[in-house]
Image (cartoon, rainbow, N blue to C red; front, side, top):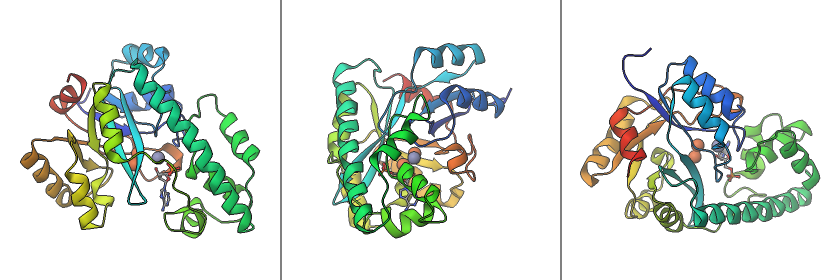
Length: 277
Ligand code: AMP
Ligand code: ZN
Ligand code: FE
Ligand code: FE
């Protein structure tokens, strides 16, 4: 066993846009010698079924409830990580249901635009993709991109984003409609900690500044293969604000094969701060 406690607290399963089943992910975590894990699927806690906890216990892996929630601000997408919330919280579950309804409507708007641009993807094709896996819960642009590759419109999912799906592209549609502040409040009401995900992706300084004025509990400082020097400004900021400095790989399995589970991680102290509010 690794002498040091290490927990990867940012990873995705096939409940959203990862490729691994939650149980398979636990086995992988064991293989790479992690002692803690938080699955942070986009807008769903479907991975947190009783059998996940049973298997985690069997493998000796500690689980921190987690989620990565989509929000929108100034027509840009912002991801907020939630940790240590009450998985049974009624209001939180209702909020996530509402989020799924908004996603369905937004997917529909994107498909309408794709049809206009003569690269049609049908709703039933998207649904068939979702139905292939027993878990798949959160369906969004990555799945639409996958179908565009299958249909031969583009060579790669990256090309689908560049040409059609990224923010500002011809077939992009916003539509999540919750602000980062809304999402932070929902996480707090469910007794969780709210963390700004991958801040190094945010390039507009003014925009970043407005996000950093929100009532966050933490900021994601360690990320995938982010070089040490690029972690430093975020660690410094966390220290100044007395925020929890979190990190994880943002593992997606075969969908982002260059990112390995455990390539970023947090220690016992950080893990416990998020687990026990
Ligand atoms: P959605 O939640 O439907 O808006 O999809 C967001 C997901 O799409 C993100 O978590 C990324 O994995 C992926 N994504 C977003 N922008 C891009 C991009 N420019 N290229 C490739 N993937 C992207
Ligand atoms: Zn993702
Ligand atoms: Fe993200
Ligand atoms: Fe993520």
